[in-house]
Image 1 (cartoon, rainbow, N blue to C red):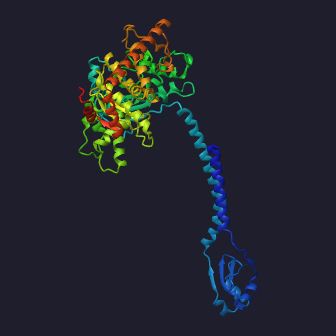
Image 2: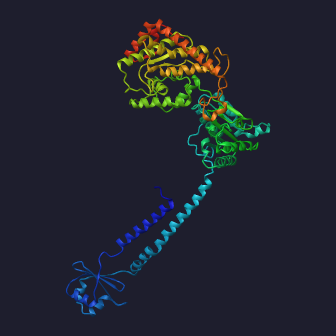
Image 3: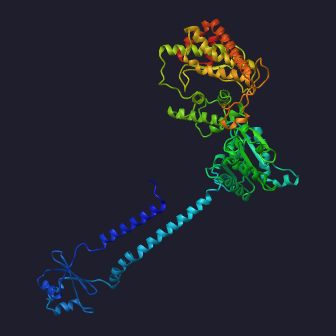
Length: 612
């Protein structure tokens, strides 16, 4: 059970009082009770040589016997003890052999001052400390109620805590995006020349691109180049379960940015609060919609010379509310494309900086093997290569670690414990050989880089095809060739073993999905250049899950027949290839069973041709 802070403090103070009282009782109070005797008895004991030491403190006489027993007596004020004892009959000779000491007046004062301070002043101080602590916590608790509506933005840049300043030099690729943002940086540095020309800098800059492409990194680079305060916050940090908190945080964020002008506000994952309004969940008073409305109002409320620019990033620009995208708000949209081969090479160099590299490392070859990889993927490749080298107790990272890390990022780690039986290994070998043989026998496919029957991730084996260059557009011929390649594995299994295994299940999912896209999205079927299906009205449920049909049942049947026609046609095509080249299929499979892995050069020697 979690205790209230006030209760915890109260218990703490009580424990302190108990401990202090116990210590005082232990150290201050006498451990042995002294018996009180008269001065006559003391004289008698002196004459009998029983006394060892006498201590005089004011009128109190402390007596220590030869057997270390203690006693005390009292004398008259302003009298000398030795004279009193002689007058009572004490032997002077024996009195001189006794150690008689007298305490100073200061010590006697301290003897009564210490308990006074301990029992009188210390409890008052402890009680005062306890009350002060309670008042402080009550005050901080009241302030936390008001802090609840404050924006939790992290500040970087000129007035922030940016430990590592990022500039455009730290961002490889994205040339067009950086050119667009240089204008923003120049405005933040020299706003006067733009205002004198009557120019208006964009109020909002929206960065669009797939996950890991470098949107946040680019925004940080803008702040680093402009050297202005950079307020970074995630879209999900605005929304709370309490009504009005999100809009209050938006007001506070914009207020802070205006005070620090010129400055940049960066909202990451804008789609968390910027989704299309009126989707059917929460009604018009939904907290998320109130937050979005406040952002729209604040962006419209900027003065021309405010010097505050709003930047946002999302990978779901298709679901944003149209009011956000109109001129005057996010009126500049910058699309970030995946890096090409040259950009990937530069990104790899940046992420490999500071790592001990072997002379065999060829970033150009690594970049050629990683088409479609984002900046985050390439950073992961460089990190995995370093981990692999460290695991092997190497002092430097070689090319082999980088190539292995590419496969690990693509497919997952090797499953060395997943040992296939002899029969399963044979099926996997013919399956992957079928993929590779069909791919190398038809036009429109990418070159086979590697074939393996070593399990990685969820795959029992894999045929790695990496394009030599990034393709922005694809044709129907390429799509059909990909479907035929996917069906090559099951065609080889049927030819050799007379039936197919469950290893082809993932291939069938990909082939069916691709055929459906050819018909419904790309308009590449006999149904004509028509897009079937509408997802715009139900975006809140997620992409494709809530698709609404904008076609009849009759058209749906035609779509199904077209998809079946494509799949059946490519199945016949792949089956014919593996049947006509059965001897070559067996040759590839036999080599796979022996070596488990075939690289591109060896595969091209096996098939006797070099695919262009």
